Image (cartoon, rainbow, N blue to C red; front, top):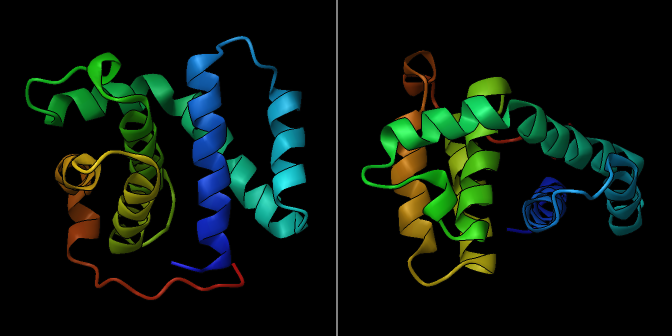
Length: 146
């Protein structure tokens, strides 16, 4: 994965990981760190929108994740897996990102930052979260300039 938006997703995942471990980190600090990591304004806005969307929707996302993650609570999941799933779930449920792209991106993040088993776990959970109305749509290639 070398798309520009993949890099933005990596940064969003890193910020979600940081927030998970340090609940008191201020949104302004996160925004500054995103801008430092992604000098391109369009990419930093994209990363921030993913981060902020996951944070704002976290309670609902976690409920939906737990409803399909057999015998798992979100709090028991490894931190990287939990946040890759949250990020993928946010894109599946609240954005127009094609489901295959959202899942593939989350899998790549899990492979890069998680354990050997992370991608299979992330895939299993996210596949069950694809909304029915998006299941039938064909996966269109993601625009690299969006």
